[in-house]
Image (cartoon, rainbow, N blue to C red):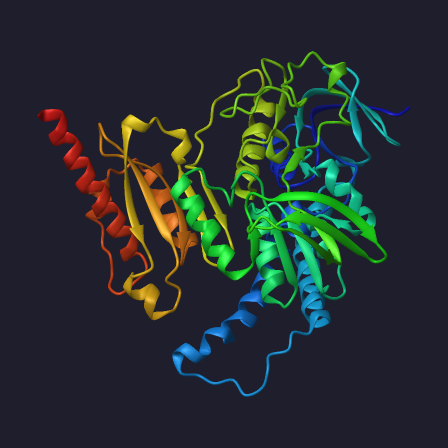
Length: 470
């Protein structure tokens, strides 16, 4: 077996792994990056970018349904050409993947090692079909994979995950989507708007990324008005029948129903890719899922010269967080044992459904009930939102009673992606509600809804202070 000794071994060539490798090289260390699967990040291949291409087509198709209210007329029916839709999705997806591959190809060939890596000790790796690598430090950046509940496996080869959808040549007639989270809502709604019959099933009422029960329930009702969504489904059976999958489930009215669909799509979360890493051969301390315990400010696993970054640590599985974590892990691996904590950005998560969903800063569930006030606004009567016929949504902002500082927000509504950015910036800057209200708000804009929520929070802060004084 060939042997190789390096300063830093990076396992995984996704967003986090590439960032870690570049940080280690920039620090002057001898580093390699090891990848056993296809090159190209999850975002470019099967995540952020292809899903937004599908959503863009769906938004264009859905826009015509609002025309009559504006006094516009469409002569003839809209026809969705599924083959053309999917051809563009794949063509543009491949273009985005190409940019990533160009970046990988720019890495010296000697630094790129193909094969799956397994730890054989705290300082050695065996690469399948490749060398044994002795390392001074390592970065685990192996990403995640879809988690599929056993019940769904009865669908056999008609069971898909989001990765599979972007290989379709045409759109199907009907699908069942399990999991109304980020992936399920984005893809399920897009397929529905492109003419696919969509059934969406959830559990325990969970919808999107929300922990605020008022926002969560509002979102369930909003999406339920557009498509068949049961956020607390009672699915009795899944069985293959020819080229279809038959689902038996109890409807909202309590009656038992049987429906045939072309595919079952599992959007039921993801699991860290740690199973094949041989972590039992190390002295790393693992959590019940087999993921190494780590410090999220340094990315270091315990006191070991091993670091973990990106979706594999299951902390904040988002592209910008993976890039940050990879950089932090690579820099700390390069200068180990001089490991330094790095500042983290304010949390920010966005779902590109319609209406959009967003969480910025602390979630409702992260806060102790007696320590904050909740400023609220509905977008149903918000001026600019009504003008555009996009007046569906609610925003809750959370402010610290003691200091007035803005802590977080959860939102469903128009332009949530932009409002969430403003909130995340204000939260990271540690602005108070009063300081944000002192900033300019133009008229008429959707952001005036944010001002209304902040004014509500300000009034509740004042009332809380009066109550304390009394």
